Image 1 (cartoon, rainbow, N blue to C red):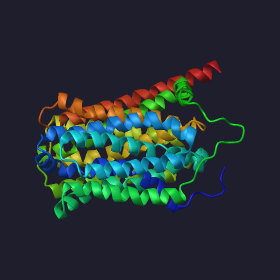
Image 2 (image 1 turned 180 degrees about the horizontal axis):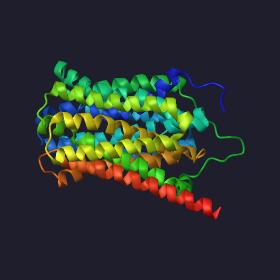
Image 3 (image 1 turned 135 degrees about the vertical axis):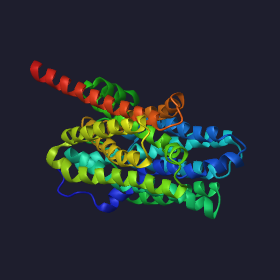
Image 4 (image 1 turned 180 degrees about the vertical axis):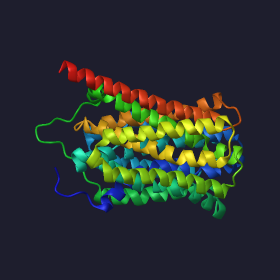
Length: 396
């Protein structure tokens, strides 16, 4: 075990690398109507860019996860950030929705190359306290979605939607500079060969003990993206809040996520990631059930607000600890394990939009039911884990 923890500056750098994705997702949300008009297309096609981004990000995770184990973390992070910069610059110059969608896919692929390296670095730095390290990084990284919608609104008020992507390019340039200088490289241990591309996936998928935690992470992400996809409609379209109030309510949910990660960083060493995940599951089941009931009976905005915040916090608590337990099981294939987690999480997130459209009723009930279904699926996954461990104890 290491004698000292990494510096706050290194944690901030790791969080800044991961933050490229939430910034790219959230900053342009307020600009969607303006973009639809200037690109001479429908708002639905602009909204599809979010699903395309998530799908491409998941594919990028699959591609770059094993490469992180084979080639090293720092070179891949620099490569991904450089691609993110170029794609962001291209997005600021497009004049058609087709080019916009294409470059969004490239931006997502590059972002995946950069962010896939971070969990492996955290595991190397924190060892058995990986959940604590991931909580710290997640808590700092959550500043990005907290301020992104407000920043996007401010940028289009001062300039144009193209300036949002110029800002993302500038952000990427700053992060790649610091990564080139300060991001640590994880060397392959003496006598240990670098894994082949597909061997890591074979090892991860054959390790059945990790399956329930992988499923828990995936369903937590599904519930989260149900909220993210529906939040602007629910708050602005259905409940009729202003854009300024929307940014405030959105920020409250992000603050709840940050608080959950702060709580986890303080308690996970004492109680362990499994118990913290179960605590989050109990809170999530209560809040998701209340949220569904409130919207079934058509109650007001504040019933939704007061149940969504603790629900989002509990989803963050479960996802962080599930991810940590997965990564800890694959010390030499952390990049590949991260790829599996990321692909399933963002792949399930990409399903949120089509499912919400399929069950659209004009009110807030569909997203509530889908979030509840995601939480129930986490409960079933953890029951599966418990039964598998009990069976292993009996046979062992």
